[in-house]
Structures are given as structure tokens and as C-alpha cells.
Image (cartoon, rainbow, N blue to C red; front, side, top):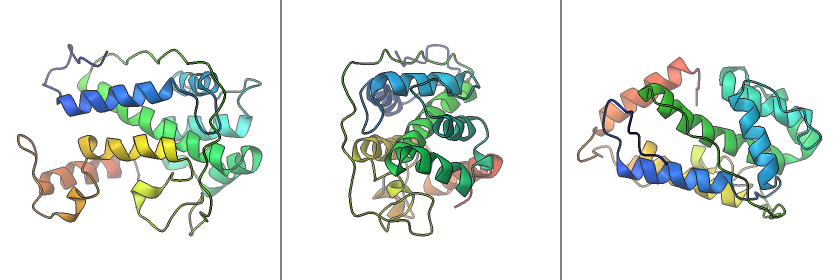
Length: 207
């Protein structure tokens, strides 16, 4: 599925495998949204629309659409409105799903290759697997006292896929502690940070 046959440059196998794991996750029921709801939500943001069906609450659709098309416009009220309408866990799941989709689609667009069709949703109800004991720490959603990798730990199964994607796309949490980290073959730490900082600046993603 993720063969990148049209890519003008080689794509590492670990990235292909990561994207496939993300797609497998999209096909499964989530903590709050079942697989059909997930599919509807992700298809709508790709189409540049706000999901307003009777299975996707409007505030959740607006959050997803804004995250995908204009992430710099996401405000505390965007997230809080979705959380108040659907619950913190639904908002966190949506943030995680759209973040993962944006990463995969963004890589495809950067390479000038066609987007991969979303997977067919699997049957079954939402899992209800939601973490407890988390709280807002001057953040829009409840989370542990961690940095970015812990942002969606409220929904553990989404968070696991999100965390797993860090290594291939950037660095693992362990690699981040190494100032002399270097991919072989690939970029060294300074080059990785230059690319990531430039990408963040262009997308107005500040931390």
C-alpha cells in the first residue's frame, strides 16, 4: 500500500511500516469513536469539509477540519467546544487521528505522490479505553506532566500509535536526549532540528 513507487527519492522502510500501522489503526474502533465514525471524520477533513452527519457532533467536525486545513487557527475555544460537546476523550481521539493523518498526507504531498485511500472500517463498538487521573496543566486537554509525546495519553491506544510514529518521522523519546544523534544513512541531529524547526515555523506550530 505504501510503496511510494511515484516518489522522486527513496523512502525508508521504517516510515512505510509506520504509515501502514497508522492505517491499520484508522480501520479499528477507537476509545470513543467506532471505526465508521473515524472513517467519516477523516474522509471529511480530506475533502475540506466539516463532518456534520448525525454520527459526528458539529464541534468535533469543526475541530478536525481546522486541525487538518488550518492548524494555526486552532484555539482553546476550538478544543474546549468540542470537549464540552462530546467529552475530553472524543476531542483527544480526534486530535490524535487528525495529527496522524496530517503527517502521512503531508509526506505524500511533499513527495508529490498520490494520497493513499483510507482503509475500510472494521465492525465493532468503541473500546471505551480511556485513561483516568489526568488533568489540564495549562493545556487544552487533560494530559500527564510530560512534553508533546504525552499530549493525547487520555486515549491510550491512539497515544501508542502516535508515540510509535515519533521515531521514524523525527526521533524517539530516547533519541531526543542525545545531542549527537544521527541516522545512518540520514540526517544528523542538527539537520533534523533544522528541518523540523523550519516545518514548524511554516505551519505556525509553536511549542
